[in-house]
Length: 305
Image 1 (cartoon, helix red, strand yellow):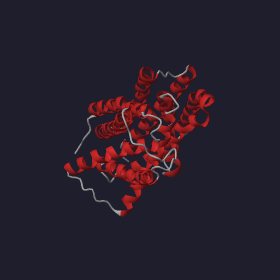
Image 2 (cartoon, one colour):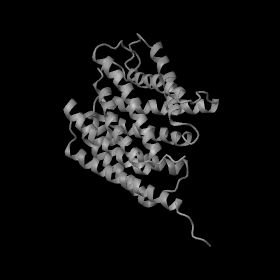
Image 3 (cartoon, one colour):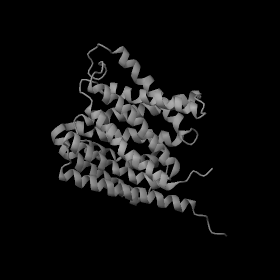
């Protein structure tokens, strides 16, 4: 069955770009006495509570092979580490800066695809990747002066998320999106909840959970609900439209992040950061355009002999 509905896919992607920065804002607004690991646990617990019942209602089987269980654990570990780096960065950095640096992820994914999957990459895309990294350095520089190595955390997020995306690319060929997301969230909970339970009362900064009260209750619930909704939007965007059509729209997240950062946290990128953001977006759009062009050439039928 042909599910191609580009306009609907674009609308879902726009919805994702609106909701995703809201999740980041909820994480940033969570009181600092709540450890980042507890925010992660809330994010994935809500996803499990929502997605696994939805998968059952839709008739999907929740059984999995031992091999797939291992892949879910690996995928969850990469996503947990990526999200943990990003949520930690948000406690110190403007949302727009952190998201802009994270957007070197397409370049890392392109390079990793060439190294790991032996995908062809020409000198033009390689140059665009290097230019994109240069733009990221312009965004990082002002933050590095003030914050030091913390400003490099979004780069760590980009690298770890690229690993997650490579695994997703391989697994999504066999598994439906909703159970795939639900099982990975379940695996993430299995990795992060037991340490939080065992470390309660230990005084460990990263692992000693607190009983959420007041504002924290709403921000933790918000992180989980908005993360679940936004990633469902992303899943359906990719279902109804080709990745090459909707992926460039993801840069609109920077606009949403800038608006939220300014009105909620009184943050606004510096002029040098804006230059870096423009370079990252321009290089990223070029990479997407080149990949779309390569895909079209690959699909073009050969002339008759």
